[in-house]
Image (tube, rainbow, N blue to C red):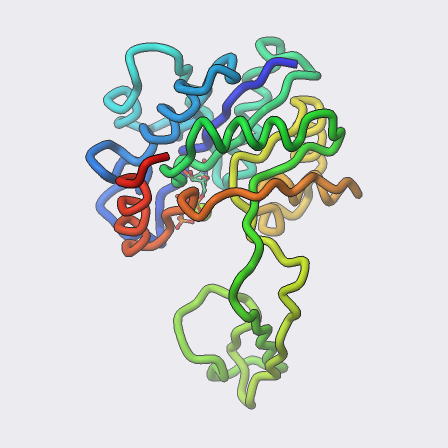
Length: 248
Ligand code: CTP
Ligand code: MG
């Protein structure tokens, strides 16, 4: 098969709370999105790179390298919509059996070596696969029974952390077998289009692999690297810059 990169970059970066979308913030001297584009352009395994932005995006042209990237202006309301709209736009240009590497614009630490590791690790696996990291922290689940003032303190977005009137029920989730999903995530064009097209609950689909899992398939996990973190909150920019200053 051929290998194509697809970068969803149509988000607004609400949690970053910057002036504009986070993919255009400067990280280590270039716009965040440019790092991901450059990693794919530097990989000899990638046939072409596509980026999907919002139809009213006014910043993408200033970020593009001189050649090698095609912009799709069909971003949607959710990440899933952006990826699915892009796949539909690529129908015909990409073969059913070609592989799509879908990568967050918000992960500037990707390297050609990680791209090669993913492709080698997933080769021949019909359910595709993704970069991921084993969980190293002790993981707690907090479940509040009823609505009311929160029992768990903080502004985290976790759905289990309250609100609840009484003490939350807290338990430790064995971290054995737990992984944190990264991107790129790689699937054949046909499988990814089928999986995202069949997804009904967009809020449950926070990555591409979860849509494939919902079909009853098990994508392969390939160990990624901490430098491939997703930049979500303001402090993540400095962590990303620390990794970007390191040799790849
Ligand atoms: N994304 C997208 N279309 C959307 C939402 C997100 O293409 N409607 C992209 C983002 O641009 C980003 C990737 O999906 O590259 C991962 O999403 P996330 O980190 O959540 O970015 P945002 O949605 O922009 O951030 P937030 O959730 O804080 O608003
Ligand atoms: Mg988001």
